[in-house]
Length: 513
Image (cartoon, rainbow, N blue to C red; front, side, top):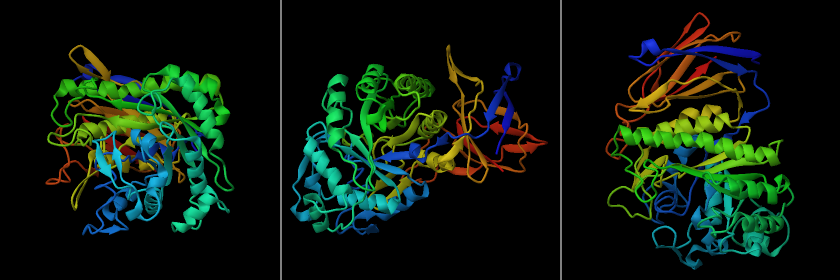
């Protein structure tokens, strides 16, 4: 157990020795606060090639699969210990009627995906297939229920179908469809983006509607629900205020928040995933860092109504959103994934870790072939993106005890603009090992850290790093391993001090034992 850890951190940018900054990091004893593994969740919507041609292959595909679920994708996600998976949307969820996706596949009705590309889906991937995928991943399902175009009865019966272990019309249908025992799904979203594609509602109307839907989404024996209210878009603090006031802390397990990083800040022309200069990189990272302000302000509102922090703030859609790759369907949201995106992922996850008293669940958008995907596929080929490697590095924080960190960051400057170049989070796992994740956003200057470890007695330090020569570097189907994790040799023990040379544009995770 750490009693108290005081770290003296010297930060100096290469070429700026005269401007060296010294700060003190106070890391207190690990208390009750835990970095929930569910912060590292993912999101898979019926959108583009995420489900169909991502997880789900053709019936006669030669790609190794189990019941049409693609096995190389499953194994890759198991490696990063995906804790939960959100489905079926997104905007798609509020037009999805679950009974169309059960029973014999050749008898399921087709539907038009009006939100994403206007394509026709055959509903071959439905409730049973999704829950089979979650069992293969050993993760918890997070289902978004249809409030926008559905009914209270429809949602109530879906919960019954999933969770009731008794005799009823829904359980009879479930057993007829091959599932004797209930899945006991815990995470349940009551609508999605109800302020927009989920119904264009006011917060007052939605909060009343939530209470009605949540009432009939029953807790069955051995299957208590974690009911999740559809929360705010970015900095819509009035939405959070209204939901906390009208719904109340006792009626919901969590309240969502959606925030996307746009390189340009303009939804009509978001910017390229791979063709950008330093000015657009700077603006992208500035927009990414807004997550700190947005989470802080929503949390403060929640604190007024819920000082004991019983309601989780769930950032169940986050990531960078760029223009689609040239020549692809604009409704499929397919984008490449660069080192810049890895820096966004590391920074955002550090923010969530540091707010883990309130942020207890999050979902990157999206898992495969959509937005800031961790995996890209092309026929039988599969690529792990730079963002995937950040999740691989950061999995050491899952369910570890949070260690509060405070420090002053040097500035990353571009012209007359500046943002903090360094962000950090730390945790202590069940073996006592400490993990420190560091991100240097400055693309030109390293950061030198000279850290006095005070009372902590440690013997070894090791680390891993993710970086590349260019911010625009990507992993492609012709060069799948260009951006990858390597051993980090820039940390060493000097007496009881930790000295680190943190390279420019890098993500580093250190382990102290």
